[in-house]
Length: 206
Length: 206
DNA sequence: CACAAAATTAATCATTTGTTTAAATCAAAT
DNA sequence: ATTTGATTTAAACAAATGATTAATTTTGTG
Image (cartoon, rainbow over all chains, first blue to last red; front, side, top):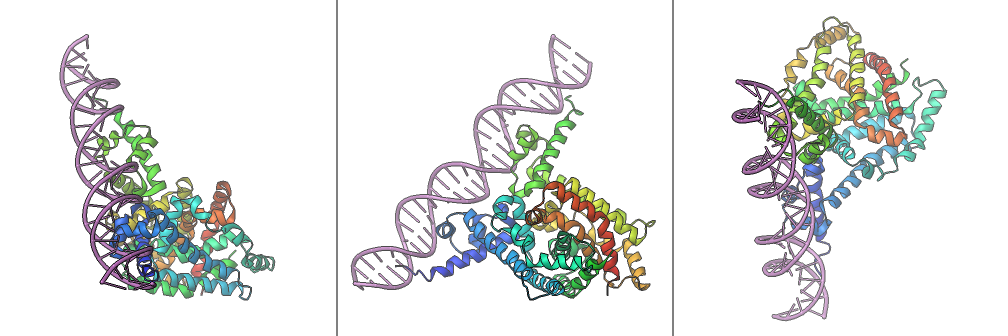
């Protein structure tokens, strides 16, 4: 039998190439030939290993959402960390993640727009969030008068907005600020420390 | 000669249909037949009035960026309003804009990703922002010790992040929070008042 | 009305694109 | 070395898609 272990190599190469191209251009704008070229492999191998463009996309998407949402849920559900520590962990974790994979946030947002039902059923977002340990902590903090805005969704929108938006608006922001990539990443590193401070100020604002 | 004034009607109908479909699906996923169907008109009329799919897209995109960035620049350059008033105006203006056109932010972000050079040269973002009256006001406030973070780009990223992100992450946020459209819009209305308060707290945070 | 220009339509074209096929190549086992 | 099955390749196919064409209808004008 053929190299069933060596396959891994080309199968993984195609997946890596697909991730690169899909992250940059999205599903609709990506041609199977783009992926083959990026991988340096024959076009037919995509269908040989993954049956169809759509199937390959769904694998990439599932893994991406799993990484993105999984890490968030893991931090939100950690019973050993305070609310304040969670803010710091989330900021650091996601700024590092998106600095390494800058196209990931826009990819997620764009593709969820184009296939909302299909994408969202991939993760049981609802119960995962509303039943998280974070929610309990947040409600306790509200009851103790340590948090002025009682709606946890405002909190999560604020935190994610401060973290994610700069990566999503990166091209516009870099152009208007006249920044290069290094300067942009420098700003993001600053935000790792600033966002927890800012969010704590927001939490106590009246 | 034919109804040169009546044309307006069908030409505008096509543009409106194109805007609807393009906002929802993006350039690459939109078929000219989708636009024709949405407009209830013959497919060939798209090329008759707009030469090509790309030309039609560019018109929609230009108008969209003009509205989006134009309004921002107008507020930032108003010499009659204080820094604090500008925050309130921007929050109110954009939350209303995106409540009416919920697909606009994701459309802008997605398409700038796919054609960064072409889109960004459409507006002279750089000088417009760095030479704005807002920058002067901001530097004055920093000098007067009223603002702790001296980099105005952090300020604008924070403000836009708080305003825009919920609309971009809407599908995920609605799913995780278990919200319907009305409840989501209600949250956005709350943010119109809260964001200025939050931003002022951020500005003074140490 | 009659005519000309403009607008609209149905049909068709040429290209792109996802997928398949059949042959060729490769790797391991006997 | 031969055989067998997996892998890879070049070629081709069928459907989708942006665009065009030629004919038809509509509209405004003298």
